Image 1 (tube, rainbow, N blue to C red):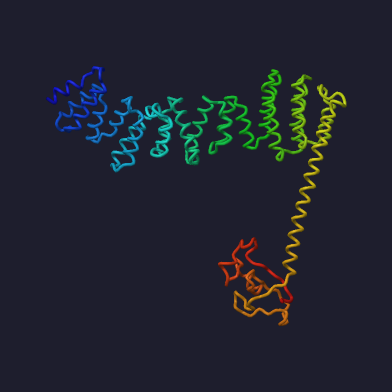
Image 2 (tube, helix red, strand yellow):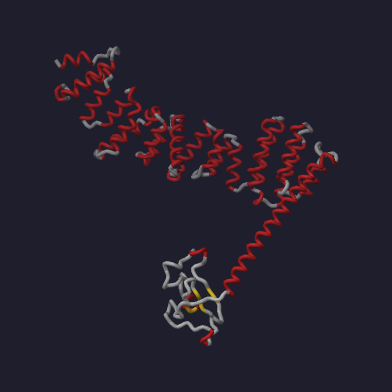
Length: 446
């Protein structure tokens, strides 16, 4: 009867497939596999695509790699394959069993990626981290799948702060694929990422003509001249094409670059960079939009270049259509005066704060120095010798701790950490905002 039931249930007819599979599975679990011809049951189940029945047989045979095949062949249970892998790899199975799963996962990594990129990346980082380089090589012929996987790997690694443990060569592959498939995200990614080889990535960006990313890498490497040239060329391109929508955005990038690196540039380089931008924008024309951009540039360069030189450059420029009369230049002069007044106020305020701080410190030190001090015991806490005061005819210096214990100067000088040995747990560093020890010079002690 079992053979007849098996032949009836395990047919290739797609009608009622799930119901027949469930019925056969319950029958096998109820009476046991040993009641069937196991090989014939497996053959018919494979032919009928009864993967849950096949799983029971493979599990009994400890052929766990073939159980994985059942999961990613069964479209209704694709999402459960990761749970099964964790179950084997973290369970009490032999190293041979775990190794068979590892090999099956690596060799079929494309199937796991197709099921879920994020779950596959998490699985790799938790279980197969050492095989990441091999996995990358296996997916080389599927660049889009590889990029999707590495994107999840680096996102998860960034959250757990483990990016530094990933091979730089793999990081290079990821950036290379990003340049290919998502070039607009390259610059923003490079600004927050680390662990990549700047020279190699710079070469990729130059080949792909990603000027923003290349300029950032030049700046990161310290090649400010090359970085400025890329920013300037990008601005020149949009100016020549009269692309007003992009001119302001590109101009902001150049301005931010010049301001950000001002402290590293010589005065000559500063003037060269800023004045080249002025000459470029003054040639735009006298339309309202163009004049607004010129004013933005002038306002932002004040404070980085001498105001007199800026004014002289604006007046003498042959392409200047913005500042022809006093009325046109009045606003610029006003902004210069406001900047100078602000800097003067800032300088005076800083000077006053510093002077007040110095005065309070000196006053506190003088008060401590002139204040009389009582001593609770005239024995040195270090050598236990007697400390003589001025009343005993002594005019030497000695130390008085905050706890009023005393010590010879020469004894304290030999201490690595100066604190009262009798009150060690009380008068350590930081108590009441004071130092470890209070040094008091006295010729007489009350």
